[in-house]
Amino acid sequence: MYEFTALYLYKAVFMAELLVAEFLMCIGMKRRPLFALRFALCCVLCIGIAFALPVLAYNALYCSAAFLVMFAATLPAIKWCYADNMTSVVFRAMAAYTVQHIAYQAFAFIMFFVGLMFGGNNFAGGVYGDGSASELFPIIVYGVSGDMLSSSPMMYAFLSLFAYSAYFIVYIITYTLSYRFVSPLLKNSDKFELRNSSLLIFVGCFVLFNVVISSVVTYYSEGHNDILYVSLLSLYNIACCIFTMFLMFEVIFRKQYERDYVTAARMLKQSEERYALTKENIELINMKCHDLKHQIRLIRSSPAADSAALGEIEDLIQVYDSAIRTGNEALDIILAEKSLYCNRHGIRLYCIADGALLSFIADSDLYALFGNLLDNAIEAVEELEGDRRFINLSIKKINGFATLSMSNCHSRPLDFRDGLPATTKQDKSVHGYGMKSVRLICKKYDAELILNDDNGVFTVKIVFMQ
Image (cartoon, rainbow, N blue to C red; front, side, top):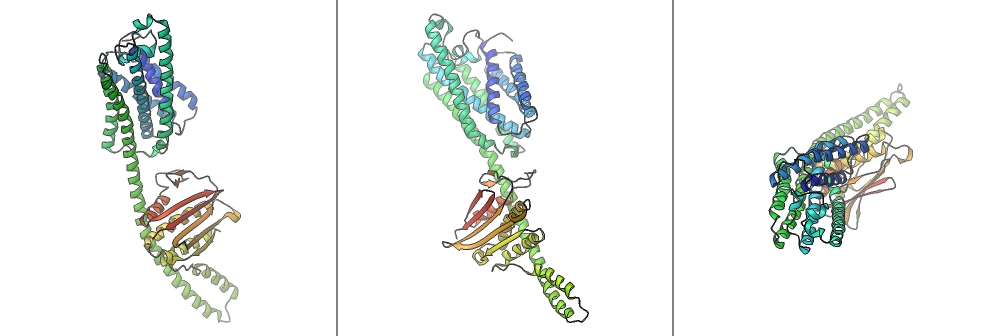
């Protein structure tokens, strides 16, 4: 059970490789306090588990179960070191395991040919075998006979140097490339969901397929030195890992995009209802303002009228009655609503707009588009003081295209994700959909959305192609 065999030693090597891969895949996650101490303790504990795991048999079934147990042991360790949810932990760990397996297969592929060149008599069976691990690990693992090497010290030294060099080069290249291409996909892994049962089955099959097939191939390869057979199996296993990872992220991101689309569509529907209500309120306010003006004129003609008080009332009415006229009723309504808010909160809204240029856009879409853009701009400038509390809005024709441009200052650095500025709100599950709704509307009307953040000034430009 605890003899110092190749498999017994490899369990610890595998755990170390997996921990390094998991550390790389977890870069960017929120770390818990005393992270360095936590991580060091987890590494010691996990490697200790690898050594403590007994070798009960030398076959594919036991090896598969052992590797799955060791992989499972790393999950609570990652969770103890990082503050992200368990879904994020699982996916990053799965990505790390796949990276480790690709590196293992690539190294085994190289060393198989080296073993054949120098008279080896098996493939990678040694790594899972019951042979002694007292000799040089990479050599006994990948099939070059210890008896043959003992008779040639120079050959032993050469192959030892080559094996260790190839091992580190292959793993460094594989891990570096994986970090470069996989880590960006994991940036928003805290939003991943595993509530769908089919997705759970998919992830489970991914683990079982890569572990079990690899073990079966390893044991079956012992004594079968057909170069084409072993080469194709190794390449197939590597390709399978890459393709499965691609599918895993494709399914997750597709579900995320579908969820975002449904939420944005629901927001547009709510905007349509809000537009109808706002339109009714604005029209009612305009009617009341018009009636009050006539009543003030009658009161002013009375000798007992207080001119100062009446003047103050007229000024208040003027605020509500000074609506922006753009030639587009829906745009006038949203601008009137936002202008009232800006006036009450000391924000200057500068507007030069030919609303007729946007007459092809449905009223509800127009309300949602400008509502989201203006709400974001107002929220940004409310944090500022003095001359920076302003919003510039223009709608004009440029080179034959209707062009919308809006700019405002802001105080926080913007983090762009998927081409859009990420929300700064704490609860990201219910915020951040405003700009997604804007992008959805732009797509609907074949418009190009251009976002720019330069020296604390955020600019939105939308060019309508129709």
